[in-house]
Length: 260
Length: 341
Image (cartoon, rainbow over all chains, first blue to last red; front, side, top):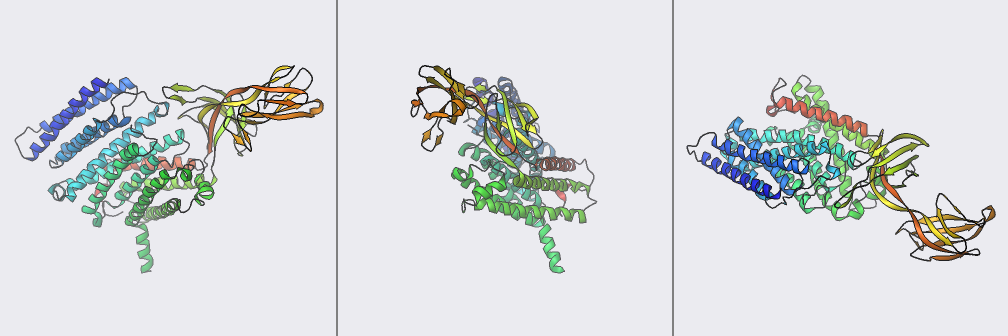
């Protein structure tokens, strides 16, 4: 499985790389067919879906354990959101940012071990699939909002005159809904597995921190005095907290959600 | 009156909530690092209901535990802010059904918090209850006891990964719940939950050679009658590594009892200490331990869990309502375009 994974991984990297290049050419107003960018990104995501299905069959579980699989999952979610925003709003200046983020996640996945492991009994529950799927979809939304927040802070026209702020706010809103589902399922799971819906382990604490942070953001994102740059600062800060909650806690701290 | 109105506006303002939420996050972030660097203080936080931990450990761990108290205070302040914000919605925004999702999320969170407070104050957690297979053991001082009928460990490449245990929970000697407790599938009896955590080999007795009379097995539950009419009775029994006074386990106090339970002599026998002793007129020698597989269980009782479940369901419905609003399935202004809270 490791060899097949490596071949697919290289192909996926190439397709996402092509999508990134096409998004830049599109931004430069080169005469490209309209389908080129979504086709490249969609093909990359399709290859990811096939790889995911193969690894699911080999391991017998939803393939989102370890650094390699989780970074692929994030890249897929960011790719899907970028594609959705492209098809709905055509925000051309955002496409290189969204695609670059997915590409960065895939590059990071290259460093992770690619072997397939059977699931431990503690993860062998339908709650695992629901919890992880909701959390990565939310992480993807928060990541896209963070990128759009960075665009705003850099003074991009997309944010002042285009649909950028609307996309940022949609990312925050949908991300918060998805992360709420992730927390509800996670709490049920923690109650069944560890004895309480609230645990004082570091992963649990940072997950609640992230949820409460975005609860605050959701409360003020439409207040006139908080719109614009303040909301973008919060979106970028939220993405940094998301990264720490997921990668920082998983890689640097002793956690019940290890990534290696 | 103007001052009261201004105070009310501040209290129900989303900005108040966001400032409190940011302070809460900052405190928790700092606390998480203190938590990981002082496991001797904070490692026991999941072993007690929260209020009991504050009383038994938190108070003594000051100032390291200050962040926990600050977190509790900020949580109460946020809950008050949410409560007032929700009341304000009922006063002012009753006709805007699209905003009902937010209110459901608020109500759900308030219920979850109420359940947490209830569980923290009235809940119990008894951890590390060791029950040898085929026996019954009390669950702390809860009045409950746990019977282990059978335990079948599941092993993986890294050792034991699950300990499915057929157990029965007894209240006042009467069986109230039974079934298999394993990872992700604890045994539940209302708000009382039995988690199978581990298994171990438990010393339940000693094997002793009595000079001239042969071998005898004596356990905590069964004395060993000897051919000469005397019998061996096991008093204190220590597990491997257990220390009591000057005694180190594994080992036990063996007592030779004569007619009318009159003690003819006793001694502590252990492979880590004295292996032989003279009891009355007999020489006895420790030849082994009687070992039995035992399950290790945590038993938690959380009377607030029903409120938490209700709160979670309402919160989940609120997010679904909000999503339906976003997708345009509920008539009214788009939530993302609303300016007022």
